[in-house]
Image (spheres, one colour):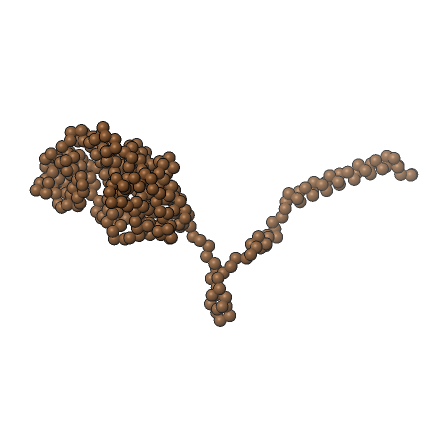
Length: 351
């Protein structure tokens, strides 16, 4: 493809953005609309299969209907020089994998902000009944402004159509990031994407993957059977609440996780809002020779704050009590004439 200047007589290759085991991604110029685009060109080993071409076309159409700020937009799809290609929105910057190479650990706040964007995009797809199936750092593109977009919806599902009769051999994603059910050859669900997001979050916060193995077979076994090391053992700065969320996301059983990326995103948003609430700050003691010693001592709250009296408003009267007293006075006062009348009936005055 490097010798081809134009793809589909419209897209001019500018340079190569990346290469993988199934495709090459180019930066190209759309000569019709005069804009930069990204072109993913699949290798001939995949493109020559008619069933795959048809299935890939269906997946591309479904993904093209997704319109969300955190999903890379698909513009076009085609077949040129015996190779499938897909035209996508070009996102300047780099993918998350490259950022992970530059930074061993991510700050908690930055991790939550990026993962929440992943959840927003993937959650939108889940509401449209689409499962990504291959969420990994290479498929998370981040602009210089830290705006994240998810790419490659549906490609893993299209790859699975190459060997539909061999369930155990189906390729459902990348072994380091796919879920236990994907490792077992079972069709993924939205909670499978949630698991993959959890693996990425684990790697960002601890600096390492939860499972490592020399072969994909052993890695798949570990995904199905082995529990990950508790994140706080690797990074004590991780809040306990975040660790509990992460361990829930990495549950082996899909039903034990959050059902969709939307649910995970809402949980992370609530956690981040709690951590961002301003904490109580003790009053500052003015610096002076008299209180220089006191200024260096930690401020302590009263041992029994409930005994602190609140100064009441002198005009804050209990009007209900006053009203009841007036009614009682009127009632008693009204009986005085009655008692006088009875008295004079039985003891009339002497004339």
